[in-house]
Image (cartoon, rainbow, N blue to C red; front, side):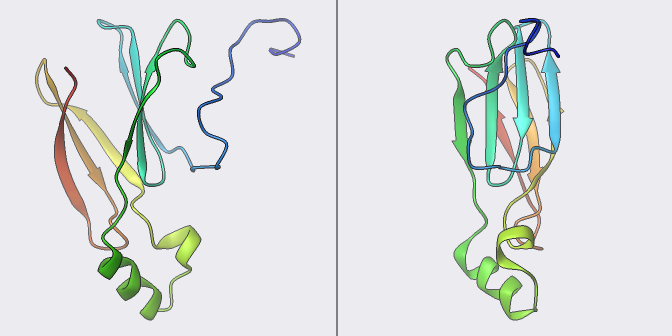
Length: 111
């Protein structure tokens, strides 16, 4: 219904089915950060398909191999699923992902 009424703009930047899980709204700058499987997206709130920025942040290959050896399903469990997007200060966001069952965190400069 929303598409038919032109009341929304679907995000076309990802056709891979990246399992979106975490959102962080930055109203002050008109942005939306989206955490997904192996990716972090920075979207424009006016048009989510305009000037899309994407960070590819996969789990380390050795961690993925350990995950598979532990009997986990590679496509659905052995990746870096972004779970935390937390404002740190005016210029940085604190980000954490599962890292194929070896969690990893870092800071992203929004710039």
